[in-house]
Amino acid sequence: MMHRRTFLRAAAGIGLSLPWLEAMADSPKTGAAGDLPRRLGFVHVPNGMYMTHFQPAQAGKNFTLPYSLAALEPFRSRLNYYTGLDDPNSAHNYAGFLTGTDVAATPGFNFRNTISIDQVVANSPIGQATRFPAINLATSSSMRISWSADSVSQPTLSKPQDLYEMLFVQDPRQIIDARLQHLKDEKRMLDAVLVDAKRVHQQLGAADQRKLDEYLTAVRAVEKDLQRLESWMNKPKPQAKMPQHKIGGPEGLRRLNLSLIALALQTDSTRVFTYYAHDDRLPGHNSHHGGSHCGNEEFADLKTMPANHRDFVEINKLEATIFADFIAQLATMKEGDSTVLDNSCLVYGSAHRMLGHHHRSVPLLSVGSLGGKIRTGYHHVFSPFPVNGEMNRKLSAEYRGRPIGDLHLTLLQQLGIDVKKHGMGSNDIGEICA
Image 1 (cartoon, rainbow, N blue to C red):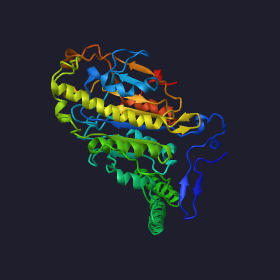
Image 2: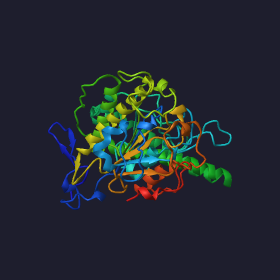
Image 3: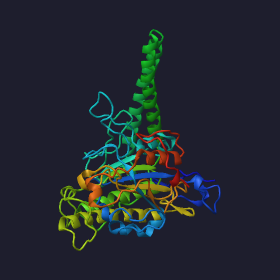
Image 4: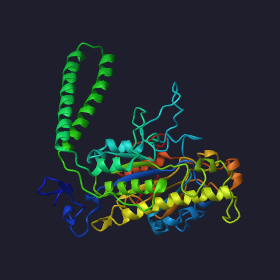
């Protein structure tokens, strides 16, 4: 069996990673799913959705995609829509979208987050098997939805050229050598710290020994990460041309970033990504954020609804169309008898509904079965949340939503990561599991 990371080497010493080949699977005919990488991705759009034209009206398998999601119709059988999942934070706070945590709930802290799902995967053997354990993107570097376990937001890339060079441009030999030397220096420093720590450890009381042990655990984690970085330093990056898009401006930027992510997934450069996709003004439309405060989501007739409502609906539709085109790219990337899309689960949505950035029953869907682990083609209604003005003005007493962390927990478990809780989520969603 050929290894996934087999490289072709040109005379100039440039390495070109192979795409997935049937020779890489135990069964050349089928391309067994167990031999293929499984991937998670999260695309977050702020300011919510106009739910009358975003949330399907029918529950179960025979649902119809509404106007804003029309571009996803070719993938309806590979799609799940979720009604009744709650984000733990309200107003403009999107920090819990991937952590599932109420950031104001920790006593003594005005803000305290927990680890986001992408970072759980990044720290697992799944993430550690790739050059980039996770990739975090945004349309602006100040926008962040990824968090470490110690409540530190993770930096995001915002420029396609930077992402392209990181993924596919081989560094000059002298730069690689300088980085290798720097890594060796850091490892020597950590080794010295560990030797000193063993000496000091014997002189401490039990309480201080525990504190020092916690510190040493963190040091060993850094050392392990340095070893991982060193192991990748001499491995050539895959080669790919910069994707070309005729559309410019904010829309073109989104399309270009997602096309690069598609290539990153195809080349197994990463297996998890996040994308905070936001531009307040898309071509031909008014302010996205301003539109989110235009009133209730109750207008069903597109022809007679107020112009500012219609504009917000059209923004939602354009955003979903860009996402659908990204999904279509993944669906064309073959891996044996399957595709990159088949072996992925891509979550798309917002931390809030449109009206007042309401955080109950947030707009949320996923595409892809995660290599057959997720049962697709359903509108899962965990608790009904009608899309009418009255429901938006006053929550129904009968509504009983589930924390969004339950979905994160389920996806992690279906990836084979042994977790019992994620944020406020402690119950897996068995009905979505294959």
